[in-house]
Image 1 (cartoon, rainbow, N blue to C red):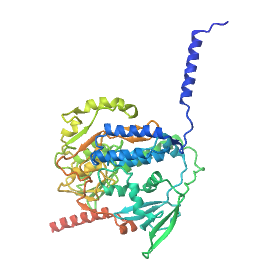
Image 2 (image 1 turned 180 degrees about the vertical axis):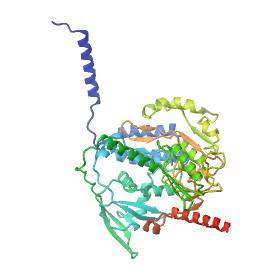
Image 3 (image 1 turned 180 degrees about the horizontal axis):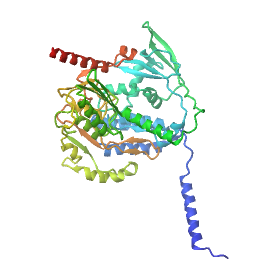
Image 4 (image 1 turned 90 degrees about the horizontal axis):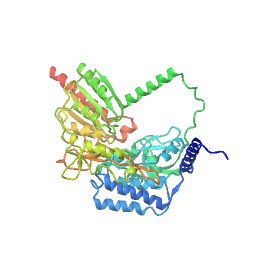
Length: 509
């Protein structure tokens, strides 16, 4: 008999290990229709509830603790039968929305999102615009079967008052405090109504819809889901490397332009700065420096800063822009704290392994038992002297102005040469819960939710109304401006600039 060498034994062990590992990772193919048993849902839900109560600093900030317990218990009571991932996520979104924190929300599992990327799902044909107690048709898909004009008043949907459907969907939306304007805008964003309808109620192939016609009469029509466009099979061959490099450069420039841009109208002596985000690597600091240098070089007297689509991001970027405009020192907030350094459920929380180290470096435990981020509580940011803009500033705000964008607007509000024009910001005026926001992954379903770790109170002496930063001059869209495709906020600013220029001209006469 031939003796087996040590090398052969070692090779066999490696092969056996690889085979075992391979067998251990074999899983059934993912199916979006998969239903999870009640026991698995309950384990995920218990973890969801425990982590929020343990590590979220604001679970009972806007909603009393006993009320939150009621909602947590309600969520558990819904787990009576097996559920698909969207069905379970709909329960989680309802419960998590009751925390009233706009930074705390749910996401599908990675597997489900991967499936969505390749699934050719039908498209919902309309978007809506909610104006107070009126629902308007905002947009339709190009291939849609809906022939109603934009701005049509919608009264019913699938046999129910349209506002009743809106209210049922808004129960699942995460907001800062009690900001109704943010709720209305969220469902008014392109595609949002159909997306939330699909999650909460599921889709049908066809719906009835009531509307008011041009004669003021109630009418009814049907709307049908739209098949997605077919993939283009006539694509050109891959471009050569040089052309592909140019395309990448163009795409990068487009991303930068969308994130922040600047135009100057020398005739009106006005700069128009659009800042759609404070997030990502968009070269904000060089852009701001160059923009304000150019404004001062040309002796521009008016600056419009449009943050209506700015969902927030890195507070350092918003602080830098604030310093270019503000005329007095400011702090980010009176208090900024977490309630623990790390979670005992760390296996399910992203970055938990380094969170303790991170918290030990940036926070200190105070007498109140909280871990305070002292730098932002103490640090006073001063106006930037170089290229500081001292002319008239008009900040355009709206319900999509969130998080760091709301901080920017709040810091400038009340300054003599600054006017906030538009609508209430979606981000809270009193504070928010954000800053460090890891994802939590529930092990049974793979559903994720965001877990903001720090609570910010901007001004402890202010009244916490649960709303956003209010504009100095309220300008809202109307059905008329939507029908005429006009921007009333920009129109109002232009009117103010023209009046200011006329007054200045009369002074010289």
